Length: 245
Image (cartoon, rainbow, N blue to C red):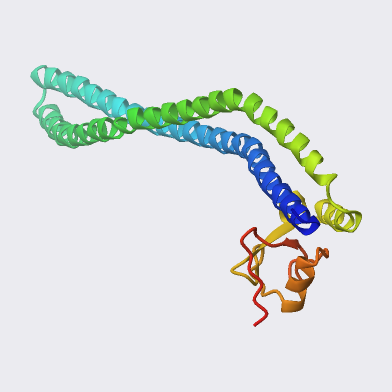
């Protein structure tokens, strides 16, 4: 194996390890972010349930108030009917008759209003179990995510340590001129964005920018070449075939 192959293989291994580390670190970041979003959803569902309960209690109270008004009207009507039987003059009798007719008309209206209020409260009440189910679902989803993350985190962290050790063992193999460029890119853009493989014989795998022929030739001559568009350090795949045309 030539020195050029050694450099190519090292860059490829470093890129693969950096990609794996990026994925693992991404997993560590994503789960807490997901749990935070799920906590937000739980609070949203709690607020929704509280609002539904508040609205239902208001409708229920309105229905009860209407029932009390009906009961009060019935008492007043019964009282006036008794007074009608005990009336001592024609004038009083006629006045009570008019009042009784008015109370009976009001009773009919109150009955309709009470029935409407009760039906409205009962119809709205079906929203409560639905909201409770949504809240329960949100809580269960959060607990599932939390449990899984707690189980996965030690394994992910162990893999990160393993790949970091592998990375260090590969990085020391780079020649000094490669190391200087690579280290600068790692500091500025991160390890996963520091390298790019040449794809389809002439394109940067990071940004798809076409690489000049002279740059490809320099890469094959084990020169540290970066993409003129995204600045990634370039390397060729194992099956690369140089086409001067």
